Length: 216
Image (cartoon, rainbow, N blue to C red; front, side):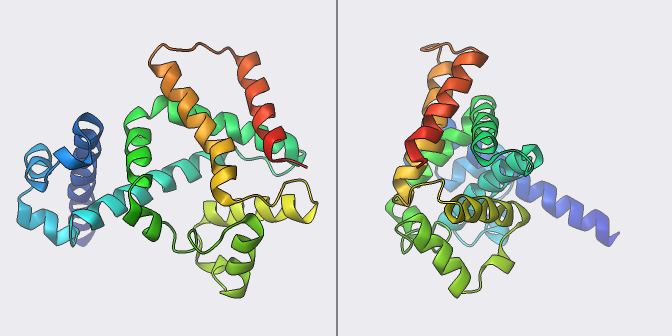
């Protein structure tokens, strides 16, 4: 009975998050009040506030859910036995395909990351860590690696390997994000809209170009 109750609670929470995702993709943050989320999810305002302290808390939870899903997708496809350059390019292609098949999630991520308060909340370290080396140093000195989810630990290990072997430039994190996830996201959006068509050969070349942009 307890397991069934927990399952129902998870289902209700997911229904609320899914409703918020759909509505924000349709109308944007500013035109998605809690009343609309309540109506779409068939959950009363009281139920929503049982799971989330505020709209900001709901949005942050949805953001973390999406980033977690993305992390698990690339972790499942990751092959640590590949040469690091090839490994990066393979993972870039995985993320591009995730962006292409999850347009609502990507629309939300773009909007969320454009919010000033989101940049302050995102992962805690992001604003203080200016470059990859800053990020790695903060994770080590603050003993935060053990608290990362499995996909976070795998990403940390990949970045650490790239820096240890001096294969990747110590660029600002925002720049690396633009050359990697940013390119994948915008290309997927243009592809979904029919503005650009790319075959597998071209995608592989784009993945290599992204690698060349950040590699030494």
